Image (cartoon, rainbow, N blue to C red):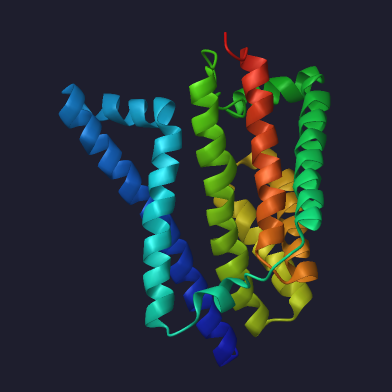
Length: 245
């Protein structure tokens, strides 16, 4: 194994560990805080955090993660903007990339609707636990929708792009041919999401995100795609749950 590839692999592991630790730290803090405020059991507190405090949980994880990564990059004596390739992109092009993300989510949604119409697939999905938890299972208010869009629709996608395209893809591209780095970053991104039924869709999304990063050489373009994708997904969920119901 080439020394550069070995070193890049180690840094990728470090990035992923820090990424997951930031989430675990935010989760632990919120669970502890919920136990103290509501005097409930750890199991009940964990359920409250996961089912009613997702926007707060992810926003806190983003804050912790960005601080940790900024410190790490500073210790490595690398300029932050050079690390994530923050180059200016015309607002009109960013809008185009945003709508690419919107169209991708709509396409994925239609694909899932088509497969759900097949009784065998729907039964298999239900048995595999693929239906998942609906963020808006009990309806959604305007305030709740705004917090979800801000946290999970904007902050989380930008944070994930900084980590997966800005850090991980960059490390891969320094040690492997660009086309292999493009494929590997998509594999890592897909495995992180840990959704069996969503593997082809997340892989396709990651390829688009990585491709936009290569084409424009700026972290802003995959951020725009990812934000468009996530915002559309949560708007569809809110509509299905009965917005303002």
